Image (tube, rainbow, N blue to C red; front, top):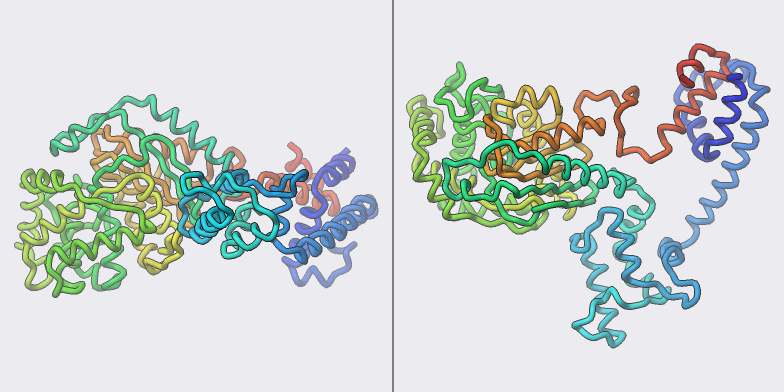
Length: 520
């Protein structure tokens, strides 16, 4: 019975996948590779017909692949989208298909493609008011236009991005969005009048992968102030410019176990970590006093804003002066923290406390939206390289330290429970924003003003829990044995193919117990 099951399973598997998996398994153990196949696998006569036909098909497919590689990639793409009757390609149809892979129309990496399309449109007599997406291209025009971006475009259509099934993944994100939208718990922050006036129904999610695949749903273009979401970013700038040793002479790395604005220092008379108010104020003093100290406060603000924009891939950031003034007027606790740290000699020499406090409030009052913040999170997920500009903004070791503290200290007094339940680095702000980083995969920003009693966005936290319940993104999810969660990084049939290969090897070696485990 098991033999028939194996033969049937192998026949139902793509031969090329089977052959590839078998070759990988043979090469994984060099010592066993020198043994005859009968000693490595046991009796295999009952599998010979299947293996022979499978490898024969694999060789044929390899020849086809070689032939495809010999064909120009531009020609292959043209043939995919051309109209067989007119032998012309519809630009609108091509760009629509490209967008389904996750690449946006305004992706900076596709700037040359867009410029070439516009130039070709005008060259062929098209009017300026008519979209260039309406034009039809012949083979030579198409090849010339996409040539500068052929590598990125071919990767997109070959499903070689980190999330190959982008449409399927974003369908889940949509489902989470609508499920969380019904959550009416929480209250909007009231200690700043401008925040108190925010519409509690605002709710947006933007996802950006390390390959620049982007998806937005909801209120993702409405600006909000960064507030505490600026803390990991200013900490990253300090690490990048000064190094870990210098920064952590002034600020610790431990969760405080207290309220985020508690008047307390650690046993070394330092702020516990850069993710609480005291630590963030001290990091701002490092940025002001130790990094280009000759800069005025206005110049240092521009310097920091420029760094944030590089992290966001050139997306626009703003500044809310009304929020800045309100925070400065209602900042008794923060001023108390500032003077308390000065009493204990926490700051670098010649620090002007008034300037430092203003600089801290300015960083909190910077404005962004979900779209830009998701790119920032994706830059952190990508080891400091912005996915849409491919600029190296931060060193990998700086990113590692930032994510470590986001994981342990990023969610106020809920940090421990969030690390346990969700297991993803994140940082929340009282404006309702939530910056989420899935290392080596993607960055996410959610925004919903109503907060729970601990100061975190109610919908944002629920979304993160839904995400890790569906996908194996928790830092300690087992990628090999977890069967109740999906891994969107894998191709649709990859997991099934590996199971069938394991079943095949169990059958070949006579491992009945292993076969029972695989088929039950």
